[in-house]
Image (tube, rainbow, N blue to C red; front, side, top):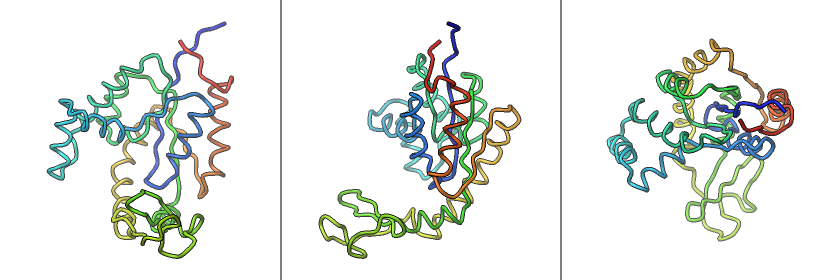
Length: 223
């Protein structure tokens, strides 16, 4: 049987586009390890690693982490997974980061979830949270039994600052400005695959069919 190179992919999409749900399904269906840059960042900060302390210093000062530090942080974790097939989420966010990743690994595909901003805005601004437990409700499809109150404790729900209409609009515009050059970078390399739609359950079958064409066995063959 022919040997196959280990499959590596990146998933991109604005906050609220369903990346978490799609990534989970890809992991389950195709055996790709879902790697979240946010999880790596938090783990390094909690472990007080050298890079984690550098990142925490940037965050505490309200600055974005420099590309080289972010790239070193992510690539260091990826090197520990050299025999694994993975799906990277949340990185790269700039062309410099994309170039650093490109030097270290050849990507098989970049999955881009293209969901209209209006749809995302509605999704995110409909979210209400019970802060003590972290339970999240959505007025449109997962409302609390009593409006404004947590199902379990009856305590009031709040809307996170991240989910207010003004913040959501600002985050989406920032994502678009920052990410378009990265999408163009991958488009020029011929690895960008965009999936458009307003519902994750309708986008998913297209993502699944595409990955089946890339991984005909429906799973990952190791190198």
